[in-house]
Length: 170
Image (cartoon, rainbow, N blue to C red; front, top):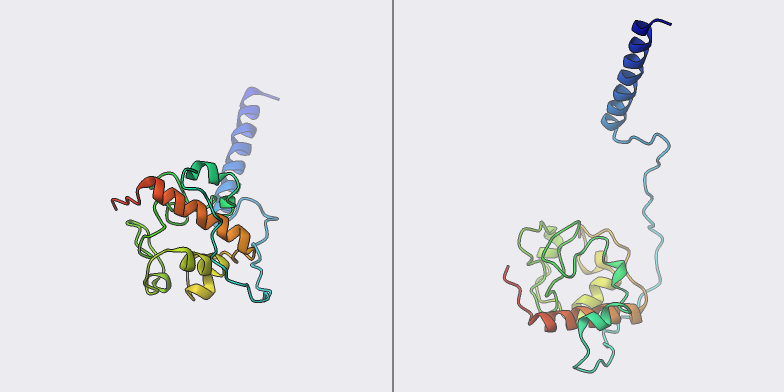
């Protein structure tokens, strides 16, 4: 083959790859076998709400509680150490803060209209069933059934707010 033919075929293949990628992006996916994620809508049995926080000595820091808190369920969408909003609002100083009040985060009207303050009872209800707490919320998370896991997350958030001095300059 001549050098001209080899370069032409190479350019043609490159154009094909680029065009295929653009068409895939225009269609919304580069992975043709990717299926939409199904949301589990199976009804759950009622969840017992029990905002009884574990008895944590005052000298124990939030950092010490973090490992066992179950916060890993929240971490993909919510920052807990920095005031940076992601998919969800950051949770720095959430305990004791008015519901739906993080600056520069677009809350659903459903959550903004709830009113009140994040405390053990409101956090427990929200973590158990976000949609039940604020019907129409943007948070598409089924909730946490385990009262112990919810209580450990709430204890961590409460202690983190205390360690922070519950300062939220927003």
